[in-house]
Length: 437
Image (cartoon, rainbow, N blue to C red; front, side):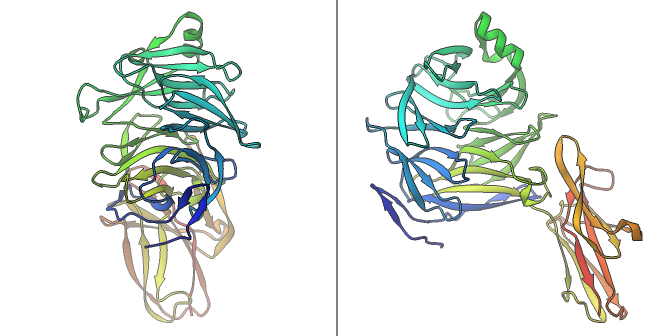
């Protein structure tokens, strides 16, 4: 078990205590966990700050936690009225104000990150979630009380005034703004516990529909376009290509909803008892897309994860490129050797491209709405040899070969990964240069 040094800041302490879980992650992705609060701490909100560190509401205060080791950095804000029950944390598009919703007094606080001063923006009974569109317009999901339905409202950031755009007979659900300034809303089903399967419906409203609601009155949730149905959706996030992600606190899962088809995939299933994923954020990075079999720099999906008494952690899900290797390792001596592909698509195909050497930089190609999903790095001027390899149920393949004694010759190899000979292409491995003795 990994243990970090405990740091105490005005009553807040952090200690790393990782959870043991039987995670099942969709092939083409990887997951790693980072403890961010002491066992038993009550966490009520999670956000990613402009510097990459995490903001959490822990035991009555909003704190900053180091993204690399989970240690406490500083206290950002302590509400003057306590106790508090944290509902959400949300950074504004400028990165200068952190909004904190709490459900004990029903306040939504605006915290100036430069001064760490806080002021109440508005008061509702049960604030649930908040998000901003590209123009900085804030949407707040909230409820006036148990059994009283819920609303999604535009909140004026100067006055705190609320203008409803959506009303629902159900309890509050998470909201997320789309890239085109539309809005996703996940409507729960509270008719029974646990909720019936696929009873949480994700609706989508267009920008023009939201503008119409501000002029003529709010829509009901069922007026929206049905995007997908899930068992439960606690939090929502979206990536750069518009795909939607939802956390399921009851089944301990993270779902991906395809932006084009609405198809739902279980991205991560922790299979824990009394363990929950709740808050979720997507962080775009420098290269590629958050898609299977892409570089890690395609982005990160960060989800808060807890069992409420033995661990509080952030699970980071990132793309995972297939790995290429040779045994014995390069430089390969004369005689038999083995070429391996690992972490590809189960029962898929690896189209191996072989050429004379590897370029220093990979060439980026576009596809769909992804920024740069495929990366090739072979010297195409020297000609390429293509070899199709069938992958096993683990997404692996091993090929036996012989080096007849090529005397310093080098071979560049890269694999395109697909679902099958006629299926979808996902991404590529990193290039591998093999030098022969």
